[in-house]
Image (cartoon, rainbow, N blue to C red; front, side):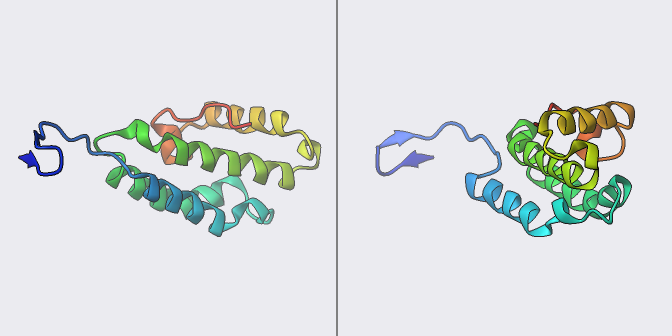
Length: 124
């Protein structure tokens, strides 16, 4: 296929998630507002949001899973914010909360879909 503007031949295409779609997914995570839902435990959050994360990973991450890392890191950071609100001992200790979530991810890697795929780096 030929590019009309540059008069050059188009030879490749890398399917990946667009910047606008990444932004929309992060906004959706913010809109869920589970960082303030201290009445939920981690299993409840996983039960509620795993189907959506699984859909995003299946659709957008099919050909380039690493392009989804910014969204998944944002989700992990939101989990850290949830932990700092839920547990008194973590209040004001973002690094400690990140280590807490990291520890849970290593003990229970099947809890969240993206943890199953190995995306559970330090979130703080």
